[in-house]
Amino acid sequence: MVDERIVFTALHARNYEATVSFYRDVVGVPLEEEEHGDECPHFEYSWQEPYFPFAIFPLKPDEDPTHVELSFNNSNVADVHSRALSAGIQVVRAPGRRPWGLSAEYIDPDGNAVGVTELTS
Image 1: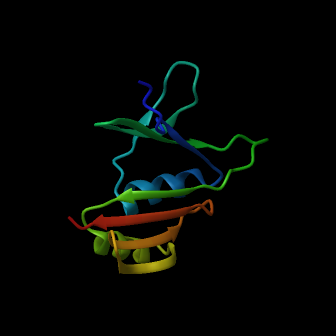
Image 2: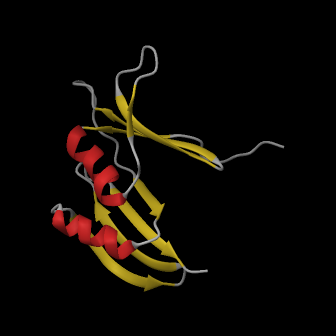
Protein backbone atom coordinates (compact mmCIF):
# COMPACT_ATOMS: atom_id res chain seq x y z
CA MET A 1 0.00 0.00 0.00
CA VAL A 2 1.30 3.45 -0.90
CA ASP A 3 1.24 6.11 1.82
CA GLU A 4 -0.10 9.09 -0.16
CA ARG A 5 0.60 12.01 2.11
CA ILE A 6 2.66 15.14 1.94
CA VAL A 7 6.26 14.30 2.86
CA PHE A 8 8.13 17.61 2.53
CA THR A 9 7.38 21.32 2.58
CA ALA A 10 9.84 24.04 1.65
CA LEU A 11 9.30 27.77 1.52
CA HIS A 12 11.54 29.93 -0.64
CA ALA A 13 11.45 33.21 1.21
CA ARG A 14 12.15 36.66 -0.18
CA ASN A 15 12.35 37.97 3.38
CA TYR A 16 14.53 35.04 4.56
CA GLU A 17 15.67 36.19 8.02
CA ALA A 18 12.23 37.52 8.98
CA THR A 19 10.54 34.35 7.70
CA VAL A 20 12.90 32.08 9.66
CA SER A 21 12.31 34.22 12.75
CA PHE A 22 8.51 34.04 12.30
CA TYR A 23 8.37 30.25 12.10
CA ARG A 24 11.04 29.69 14.79
CA ASP A 25 10.34 32.48 17.29
CA VAL A 26 6.61 33.13 16.84
CA VAL A 27 5.09 29.82 15.69
CA GLY A 28 7.62 27.74 17.68
CA VAL A 29 9.05 25.40 15.03
CA PRO A 30 12.56 24.49 16.31
CA LEU A 31 14.34 25.30 13.03
CA GLU A 32 18.07 24.65 12.76
CA GLU A 33 20.51 25.79 10.10
CA GLU A 34 21.35 22.97 7.66
CA GLU A 35 23.36 22.33 4.52
CA HIS A 36 23.12 19.12 2.48
CA GLY A 37 25.82 18.68 -0.16
CA ASP A 38 25.11 20.95 -3.11
CA GLU A 39 22.01 22.59 -1.54
CA CYS A 40 22.34 26.13 -0.28
CA PRO A 41 22.31 26.63 3.48
CA HIS A 42 18.79 26.79 4.85
CA PHE A 43 16.78 26.27 8.04
CA GLU A 44 14.91 23.03 8.59
CA TYR A 45 13.11 20.91 11.15
CA SER A 46 11.86 17.35 10.71
CA TRP A 47 9.07 15.88 12.78
CA GLN A 48 9.69 12.18 13.26
CA GLU A 49 6.33 10.40 13.66
CA PRO A 50 5.37 10.49 10.90
CA TYR A 51 8.56 11.84 9.34
CA PHE A 52 7.88 15.26 7.84
CA PRO A 53 10.58 17.86 7.11
CA PHE A 54 9.81 21.58 6.84
CA ALA A 55 12.48 23.87 5.35
CA ILE A 56 12.99 27.54 4.57
CA PHE A 57 15.40 28.52 1.80
CA PRO A 58 16.43 32.01 0.71
CA LEU A 59 14.71 33.06 -2.49
CA LYS A 60 17.03 32.99 -5.51
CA PRO A 61 17.41 36.32 -7.37
CA ASP A 62 15.41 35.10 -10.40
CA GLU A 63 12.75 33.31 -8.35
CA ASP A 64 9.28 34.47 -7.23
CA PRO A 65 7.79 33.16 -3.99
CA THR A 66 4.79 30.88 -4.30
CA HIS A 67 2.11 31.71 -1.78
CA VAL A 68 0.89 28.82 0.31
CA GLU A 69 -1.39 28.17 3.24
CA LEU A 70 0.09 26.28 6.20
CA SER A 71 -1.33 25.22 9.52
CA PHE A 72 0.45 24.01 12.64
CA ASN A 73 -0.73 22.26 15.78
CA ASN A 74 0.42 24.13 18.87
CA SER A 75 -0.16 23.44 22.54
CA ASN A 76 -0.60 27.14 23.41
CA VAL A 77 -2.20 29.37 20.77
CA ALA A 78 -2.42 32.26 23.26
CA ASP A 79 1.39 32.29 23.54
CA VAL A 80 1.77 32.19 19.75
CA HIS A 81 -0.67 35.09 19.46
CA SER A 82 1.23 37.12 22.06
CA ARG A 83 4.53 36.52 20.25
CA ALA A 84 2.93 37.40 16.91
CA LEU A 85 1.62 40.71 18.28
CA SER A 86 5.02 41.48 19.85
CA ALA A 87 6.74 40.77 16.52
CA GLY A 88 4.32 42.98 14.57
CA ILE A 89 2.95 40.03 12.56
CA GLN A 90 -0.27 40.66 10.62
CA VAL A 91 -3.23 38.95 12.29
CA VAL A 92 -5.91 37.63 9.93
CA ARG A 93 -8.00 35.96 12.61
CA ALA A 94 -7.35 36.32 16.35
CA PRO A 95 -7.59 33.18 18.49
CA GLY A 96 -11.13 31.88 18.61
CA ARG A 97 -12.97 28.65 19.29
CA ARG A 98 -13.68 26.45 16.30
CA PRO A 99 -15.21 22.94 16.28
CA TRP A 100 -11.69 21.41 16.25
CA GLY A 101 -10.08 23.70 18.84
CA LEU A 102 -8.67 27.16 19.48
CA SER A 103 -7.39 28.57 16.16
CA ALA A 104 -5.78 31.73 14.85
CA GLU A 105 -4.39 32.83 11.47
CA TYR A 106 -1.50 35.11 10.53
CA ILE A 107 0.41 36.33 7.47
CA ASP A 108 4.11 35.43 7.42
CA PRO A 109 6.73 37.93 6.14
CA ASP A 110 6.34 36.62 2.56
CA GLY A 111 2.54 36.86 2.55
CA ASN A 112 1.68 33.20 3.24
CA ALA A 113 -1.38 32.36 5.33
CA VAL A 114 -0.35 30.51 8.51
CA GLY A 115 -2.81 28.97 10.92
CA VAL A 116 -2.14 27.63 14.40
CA THR A 117 -4.55 25.36 16.24
CA GLU A 118 -4.67 24.10 19.79
CA LEU A 119 -6.67 20.92 19.24
CA THR A 120 -9.38 19.92 21.69
CA SER A 121 -9.54 16.29 22.61
